[in-house]
Length: 215
Image: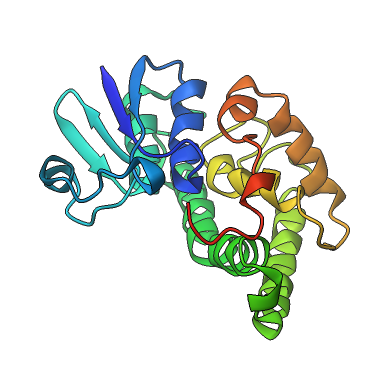
């Protein structure tokens, strides 16, 4: 049995829950972090000494860090579309996952979602927000280019590469900021929204978080 810890509204937890649902994995889910607390409990720190979510326990194998969890679940339970046996093919998903974590997520999630959406208007750092908006727009254009002739980032089939970047889109397109024209990205987003697992675990309303700096 797979066990998952983390807030359903937490961005990195949503990635894991989305993949678990895509794979049809039976699991238990424990709210942890934010108002639920528990991250400093000795039992939790034994699993993850960094005190962060998500964390999984799969029959005694403990894995933390969202992308490490995605790779683990894909390797154990996924088919070749998710986790290819070919290192070259697999590296493409790895590249998009790492890019999402080091480029898209810092620009959008940290810079825009937290710096703009979750920060009260009077406290917003507009020069920083505009810079992050520019960087996020550049990331969207990179995705637009990558999706030329492709339905998904890995090609014609949904794969692991789609999850980290795709998790951003629900919040990004649900905010009142202008973005460059990216019709391929928008079409990709529509395809993701057709997936029940995406609707259940990523499309969680977030408007009540506007202007709130606490969980």
